[in-house]
Amino acid sequence: QVQLVESGGGLVQAGGSLRLSCAASGNVFSIDIMQWYRQAPGKQREWVATITKHGGAYYADSVKGRFTISRDNTKNTMYLQMNSLKPEDTGVYYCFSRLQPLLTAYWGQGTQVTVSS
Image 1 (cartoon, rainbow, N blue to C red):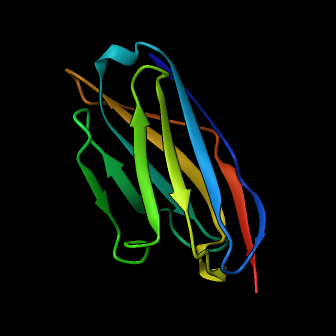
Image 2: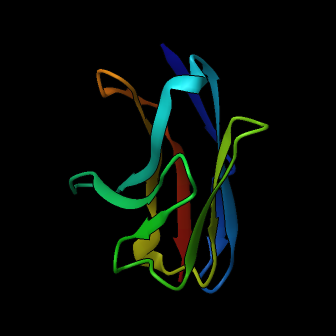
């Protein structure tokens, strides 16, 4: 099992920045990919970014060039640096991890990001 705890959300004006963190504990050595998702009010949860065990990073088109995903394996923590924030980035941001070998999925509890115009 893995436990995921997000932090770093808050209220920011459009154009501002926030850095989200996702701290993992438990069977962290079995984690291969970690991801960020977000869910806006009244909308489905959507994928934001992925980072692989070896540091490969992938982004949704809507955040490419503005968000940066990173991972510090020594601290068992994943980050999402969010710059040039827009009101449409508002939502609850969730951390996700997948464990080998059964590809078991784990979610964090989410952290609220609100971008005001």
